[in-house]
Length: 188
Ligand code: DGI
Ligand code: FE
Ligand code: FE
Ligand code: FE
Image (cartoon, rainbow, N blue to C red):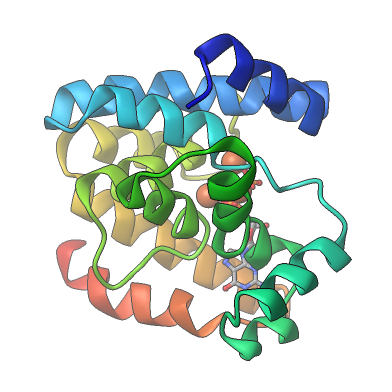
């Protein structure tokens, strides 16, 4: 496995300065949440740093991985927004040497969530949404929920993402809808 310094170096090379700063903010928020909710702090650190590793890759890299690894061909109907997590986790595994399936699943699920999410996956999903530079209507409510009720926070984000996608005539990746159905009962 890479040292922390080697990992930061690879991320710095793969990402713009702004996105490199974002993943470091997500790392910090995720480590705080892991302490609060009793998850593995080291795993939260690595998943937070690596979650957007593939965000700036060209489409053809994702298409090649989808075909080589025989991932769900339905993925080909979407784009970078979905691919950088679901397919990007494969690049994190192969190029950064991250072997933990718990960490890789958290990266896979960080944009679209999951019907079943580990505590770590819930934390990465939320840390990405509430990191200190995020500024949108409702982010303060999301931050409050991340202090008190992690499941309700996951439901809150999924509901607001779905609303946003529909409002803007964007296609909804089926897992996003399944995530909404699975988690919305926890938001009351
Ligand atoms: O990579 P980040 O910008 O840090 O954050 P992210 O990975 O959570 O990406 C959020 C973007 O993904 C946001 O612009 C909405 C988009 N997104 C989330 N769910 C879906 C989606 N886009 C489509 N088309 N369909 C989805 O279901
Ligand atoms: Fe992302
Ligand atoms: Fe997100
Ligand atoms: Fe992110």
